[in-house]
Every structure is written in structure tokens, then in C-alpha cells.
Image 1 (cartoon, rainbow, N blue to C red):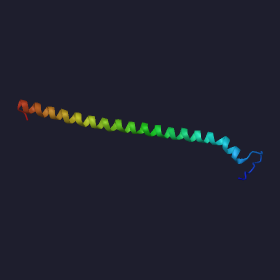
Image 2: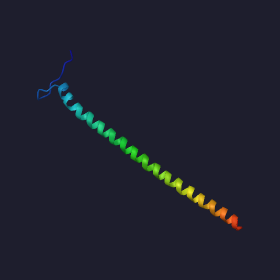
Image 3: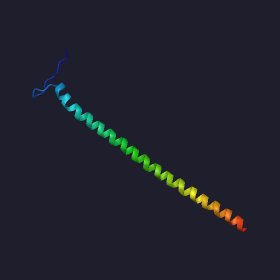
Image 4: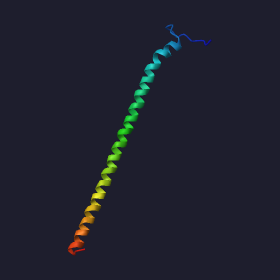
Length: 77
């Protein structure tokens, strides 16, 4: 049998742990969930920034290509 220490108010450490443990577990769950959501938002923001850069560069290249083809068709190229 395991010996249990009594605290000053007569409550054993295992009784105290069983009362505090669900609150601590819940707090850890909330914290890890908040961290995961934060990472997801950060990743989504980063992806949007990268897509914006990609779309701007492809648009610029497309416009340049169209202008080059138009100039060649007119005889300026």
C-alpha cells in the first residue's frame, strides 16, 4: 500500500491532485489548441503573401509577353 502524506488542512496529496488535475489538463488542452490555431493562421497568412507575390510576377510576365507579341505583330519588335 502507498503511503499518502497529509497536508495541513487534513487533505491527502492524492485527493488534492485529483481535484486540481482536471483543471490543469483543461488548461493545457486550451493552451495547445490556441497554439495550433495560431500556427494555422500564421501558415495561412504566409501562404497568401506567397500567392500574391506569385500572381504579381506571373501577371507582369504575361503583360510583357503580350506587349512583345503585339510589338512583333505591328513590326516594332
